[in-house]
Length: 327
Length: 300
Image 1 (tube, helix red, strand yellow):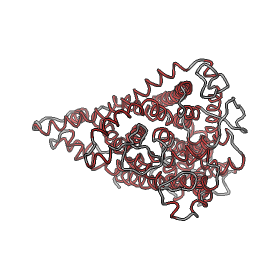
Image 2 (cartoon, helix red, strand yellow; image 1 turned 90 degrees about the horizontal axis):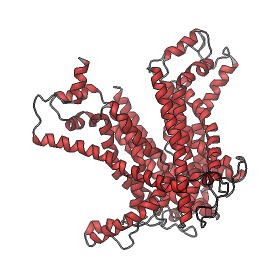
Image 3 (cartoon, rainbow over the protein chains, first blue to last red; image 1 turned 45 degrees about the vertical axis):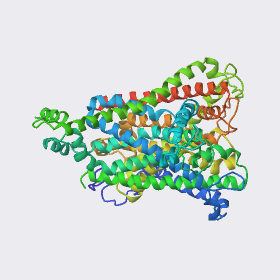
């Protein structure tokens, strides 16, 4: 915890090595056990990479032409681009909708509402996180999709002929289960994690900065812009990236509402597919060698993608935490 | 003096009243923050109301205990979700038995033994990263290393869920162990206890309620996961109480299957199963909250 190096009282005086033979056997055994449990994290991550890579060799050996195509039909086409597009687009929609809301709530709970009253608000936001993914999916497909279908159709006929809007929200294949619906569900699902991580970062802003801003006559919003935001920027960016990573890996809710058709299209109200969703929906029927290998390969692809996003995000968060400590 | 400072923090002293635009901008932004909260309440309220309304209509004693899951064309009256309820409790329970001890041990390593070593920092960082690994990848992983060799079973599902829970338990336990004051450790060392003994009899009990509440949240999260059990357990129509062999099924799995079906009976069963699942996770979450609040009162 503290960064000051100090003598470990558990080590008998004069022994340099923590695993010294003078310590009782049970004591050393426990330390080895704890170390093994810690190492398990690394072992699992390495094994995931190794086993999925090994199982997807058939797909990768098909060459880049095979992977860099849109179509994925489980028969002759096993392209990654169509599903990757769906994953990225739905997650980006989720982040665009979810982030302003999350940051708004984080600021509300830290700067506007007093600490005592913030508790019940936090419980409510936590409730969102406790509702399982499959329940959001169930609600999405049975309640939300039919309802949104009408709205989408209205919007699509409204924007007909308007250049950019028509390409985004128009089109003739508009359906309730679409990239946008998946994005909406993702926005709801990533709000709790972005809110709680942002709240943690914002809470580290020193009171003296905020008081200083007020002393200069700033309004609350000017104080947030001038004192809170510069201090917590990095951490909030990290929180957003972690939310983005979660959105990309979200499986069941997306599988139920994205529409189950591999497509690359600028039309956000068209049905599509995502990497996680296609694995969930088609792995059961993928008995053929290349089909199964391709789905496992997509899993590896998703794994590496989320690991990279999370690495960058954690780097942002830890850097901002270090700054907050004043190092 | 302190009181005056915190008062002025909550309500800036209007030595010079902000001019019109600055003031309205402040008010607009405050309203937008409240609006953000209200926006989140809408889907949450919507989903909970639908869940309770449709789920309560489906749930009965027969629904919760009857061990035969009927084909999805049949209406609600026949059969029940007993198999899935038993499966959920078994699989999640066993996953907790694996992940919680290992997670707590991992946290003990990070906080008590690791110190500033590179390895400990790496494990700490990677356990953070691992919480972001998609649950479907865990399912694929267990499918490859376990199911292809030993076949589908509840045990395989437990392994997948345990992989998911492990980093969550490590993180939450680690945060709790950090709060245990060093003076407790030093006092026990002064009495001549070994490090393992200090950890097991002093440090862990001191952090116990925090660790338990973190673990319960991890259990709640695992109980609701569908993706990891999708290709590790297959599915059954009859209760399979043997965790170690033969396909099994869980509530999230049944919700997923029935949600994709167009039949009225299937949809009703999905809502009933969803309400049961959410009730289980809420009970776990409330238990975690109660334990946490007891804990904070004790330390004060």
